[in-house]
Image 1: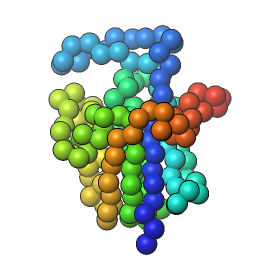
Image 2: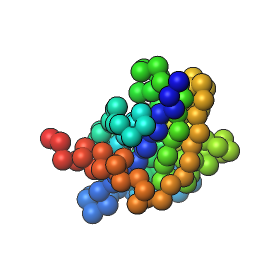
Image 3: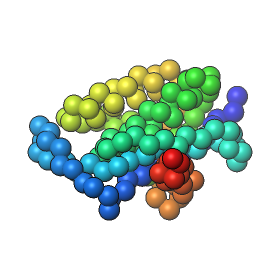
Length: 146
């Protein structure tokens, strides 16, 4: 069985209106955000995700991109996956199961781990942002779709 490659990323419009949202750990900044993912079988793109998600902080958007990609994989019965992400917090959360104290990020972390339990074999690897251009492009494209 083929091992699929999945690249995930998020994009934010930092120059847009910024809101401070109260949380238990102080204030955090949120921005208009989007998510993207590219799913490959070898070098062939077999799936893509490009979606606006409203206002979000960057970590939440990165985690949501991973969760959305996992749901896609499960829905398409893909069970062997190598994930690549440029968000170190996401990679550490999955590999070391370090769960955030921020309630919405905590809930999403557990949802990701639950999805990964449904995937037979997976890895997740951190890659530099400049090596994640296809997923970033998909995330950015969501801002261009009306």
